[in-house]
Every structure is written in structure tokens, then in C-alpha cells.
Length: 312
Image 1 (cartoon, rainbow, N blue to C red):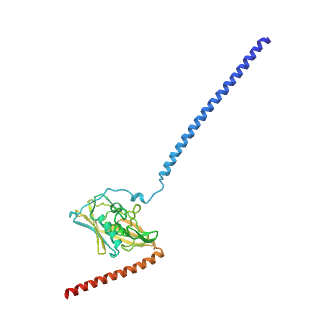
Image 2: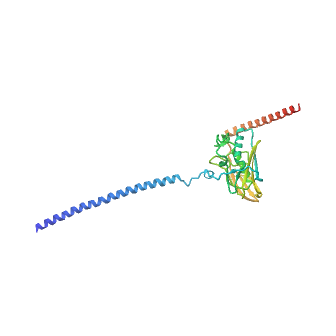
Image 3: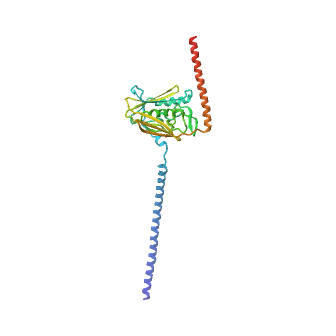
């Protein structure tokens, strides 16, 4: 009996050892596979997170810039100097000091880009797109511009008078104003509240032709007078247009009413220039008046000499 039990005990022990070895292998293999899967998932998560983060930071939908509207590209406008545009719809004039040579050159440069431009029915006029960037190569000179609450020398000084004159003219033509911004400081060539400042890539003046017919802008400046006229080929009834500006506290309110109904309103607020600038501006104004008097005196003397020479 003892001889039979001994072999049986050996067999049982062998089975237990073999089973233990097999169990050890079965545990190790899944662990290795699980680690491999975990590594794959980690790599995939990292890649996905990186892509998502990049997209979020690149396209920040909560941030808006003033350039978003002014950078829009509209269809290019063409010029037409023919005599087909016979009907005057509206006009507006502003005045400048012709003895301010560089500023006058800037005015004439901008005017030359706008004169005879045709805005088709439904078309949009963009000041910046048509006048272009104010650079030396584009023929612009340094004159007074507004920067950081001061009047300082800068390229293209004076072009805002051109954009403001166009604004006033097309207001009276009863077209749709698309983009308009007021100056940060007070200006004098149009009533406060009736200006339209421009700056390359940040502030633009735009209007849309909503009259049902093509219109042409005629602009010219000479002898201290700057004028913008709006013409059409056909007679257009724009209604009884009235422009009114009034002050409400520190805000200037401009309204346009047509046949008694208001169809446009814009608000403007201005700051006073810094004290240092005010003193400099006062001195400059005195110098300007002095130059103006000297110019008039010189012209008068020349006229007197010519008369004497003619009579003598």
C-alpha cells in the first residue's frame, strides 16, 4: 500500500508545480499587454491634446479687433471721367491753409486717388483701399497727425480731412454708411461729430451705394477749398435730407433724417490735447496767422506794383 501512495504523491506534487509555473506565465503576459496599451493611449492623448490646444490658441473667438471690418477687401472701383454723369446729388466743402505746403500736398494726393471714382449700385467705397497706404513712395509727406493724445508730425497728415469731406458729402446723398470712426482729439475743418478719421489697417471710412444707380465722386482742392461732389447718370430723388448735430453732455450726436424719418445716427466723443501740445499748437496757430498776413501783404504789394507799372 505504501508503495502505491508514494507514486501518487509524486504525481500530485508535479501537477501543482506545473500549474504554478503556468499560472505565473499567464499573469505576466497580460501585464505586458496592458502596459503596451497604456503607452499607446498616453501617446494618443498627448497628440490630441497638442492639436486641440494649438487650434484653440490660434482661433480665439472671444477676441475681436477693429481691423476685422476695415480689412475686408471690396471689389476694386474704376474711374470714369466722361461727361455722362450730369446729375448732381449732393456736395460738401471744407477749407484748409494752402500755405501749409506738405499738408496741402497730402490733400491733393488723396484727392487724385478718389476723383472720378465710380461706385456701382450695391458697391462699397473704402477710403483705405482706394487711397492706399500713406508712404513716402506713394508720395505722402509729413504733416500734423494725432498720436497718443498729441498732434505730432506723421506721414499722410491731412488725409482725414479728405475722408471727412467725403463722409459729409455722401451723408447728404442718403447712402448707407458702413464704417466710420471719430477722431480722438477735437478737429476744426468740419463740425465736431461730423468727422471720419482714417488710419491704415485699423480705421477706415466706408459707404455702400444704395441709390439704385451708379454714382461718381468728383473731388478737387485748390486755393484753400476742398470739395466732394456726388453725381449720377440719371436723376435720383434721395428725399428731403437733413443733417443735425447736437451735444449731449460730452457726446456729439449726429443724425440724418430723410423726409422726416431718422435713418442714421452716430456718436462721437473727443479729448483735449495734452498741455504741452496745446502750447505748441497755440504757438503754431500764431505763426500760421503771421504767415497768412505776410502772404496777403506780399500779394497786395505785388498787385500794387503791377498797377503802378501798368499806369506808368
